[in-house]
Structures are given as C-alpha cells and as structure tokens.
Length: 292
Image (cartoon, rainbow, N blue to C red):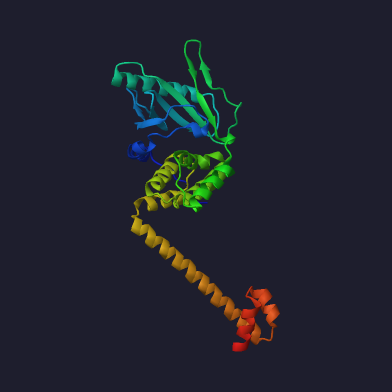
C-alpha cells in the first residue's frame, strides 16, 4: 500500500497566501451553505500565551465584512465542540485586537460523506455560552453527477465556472471511507490536469492538495507537485513523451502478437484458430500466412 502523506500546515499557510486572490468572489453555496461570497483568506495559526498553538483548516473574510472559519470532519464527536469554542475565543480576540471591536464570526463544519444529516448536534449550550454551528453534509451531493458534469465540460474544452471548481475541490470528500476518498483524489487530479485554463487548473490542483490532505497518498501528492513545478513547455514535452512510450508499448505488443501468429501458422494451425487466439483480424492472419 502506498504510504499516505499529509500536507504540512506550513504548506497550507503558503497555499492560502498564494490563493487568496483566486478565492475572491467564490462561494460555499454549492455545498448547501448560505453565506456571502469569499473576500479573502486569513492566516490560520492562533498563537496563545499557553504552550499550545491552535490551527484550523481555513479562515475566510466574507464580502459582508464578517468572518467564517471552516473545518472538515469525517466523523461527529461532541468533544470537538470544545476545540471549536477555543477557536472562537482566540479568533474573536485576534480580530478585536486588530479592529478594536467585536467582529461577526461564524463556524462552518463540512462533513464528508461518512456523516449523515440528523446524526449531529450543531449547538453547544452550556447555559452561559451558546454556540451554533452551520453544517454541510457532502453525502447530500451526487458524486456521479458532479463527476459527469465536470468531465463533460473538460472533454468539450468548456470553461469551468467558479461553482464547477468548488465542486471539483470537494469531489473526493463526497465518498465514504478512506480508500474511496483516495481513489477519488486520484481521479480528480487526473481530470484537473486537463483543465484548459492554466490558472484555474493550478487553483483546483492546489486546493485538492490542501483540502484532501488527510487522505491524499504520497504518489498523488507528488503528481500535483510535478504539475505545479512544470512550465507549460515542460508539460507539453512530458505529455508527448508519455504518448511516445504508449505508442512504443503498443507497437511492441503488436509485433509480439504477429510473431506468435506466424509461429502458429508455421505449426500448421488454421488461420481461423490463430485469429481467435491472438485477437488479430482474420484478414491480417491470412496476409501473414501468404508471406510465409
């Protein structure tokens, strides 16, 4: 089994800084969450006086001036609310120190297809503090429909909308179980590499890399790195090389099959049986027979 590799939080920070402009104007509405459009990505490290430092998945500034921090979970655990409460407190304090006022802040938890609606409790109520979580359940998205829609557009070289890209980013998480998610990551990478618009291709690949970091294998991680570090000329040359290798393998396979067919014919096997056992067309086998 291929070794799994998580993306370092430093990589997430770097990716967030690079992608903040590309995230502008996009929305979480495709996941069933009613929020304003994304304005910017904010730093996700939350240093404290204590020895620990909290990190969350993503913190976004929205178009209405409010903030939302987004986390992804593959299971529901009530204890997680304690961590979310810490996030709320530290983000609120950081924003207060930055702006001198309490800034509107929301929490969104996007559950992978492993969790169904109705099996979670989005409210933490201690009597003195009440926290309400906005939830999205990817099990309610049709993975096949997402895939077919994206594949059709890319096959036809149509431009992908912002909603299309957000669907592609989340596509691997619409599957249940680690193995199914890993396989979906591989498919998503292969399809994303075919996006005609280079900037959109980079955006999708980087965000698949970041959002699916809990499931991505080392091999798929390296595939993304290779694409991101290649120039356009490098990618063209790499594709031509791959096609040349595929052709050479096919040619070699054909020549081996031809030699086998000739040996059968020399041994007195009928052309019909040679065709049936080698897969070569009968007409081609008859031509080989005449050339012997």
